[in-house]
Image (cartoon, rainbow, N blue to C red):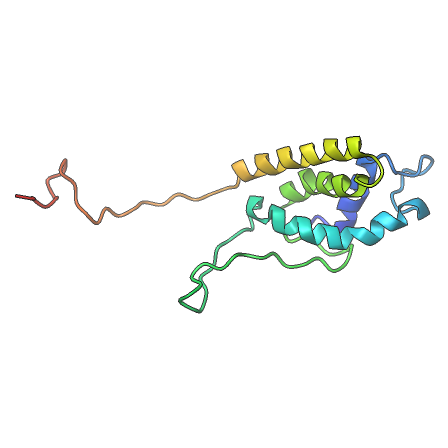
Amino acid sequence: MSTTAQWVFEKTMALMDNLDPSTGEADTSENAEYKNKVIPVLNILLQECYLASDVFAVTESETEEDVYPRPIPAEVTSLTQSIPLDDGVCRSVLPYGLAAHFALSENTVQASFFQQRYEEALARMKATVPSVSQDIENLYGSISTGDGVSWG
């Protein structure tokens, strides 16, 4: 987890073709409005992307009513802060999500393209979340091994 919100902002501006043509910089006066929206929109996308990240973990609650509470990632509060998702999600999903939101008011065709790429990348990440397998103890016995119970 080392990808920052600034990195995602810069890649989003590159996707939207909003880099300064002479310097290649994303931090320009033309992009100030986008930069002001990065943190709020990014925090919404974090929740959407959390289940696709390998940092997702279900934890038990302290109360019996809510044994498995809905997990919520920590909010990003500055552009220099690392995003609390794995770098794969940050680098392949989040720039498209931000670009889709930013392009919506200016170019709906471009916004649709970015949204489609966002959804494809998110689905790909969800399908490849690392997992661990473990043996399951058979508590009921088995007929094939002769350790089951007889019904008759």
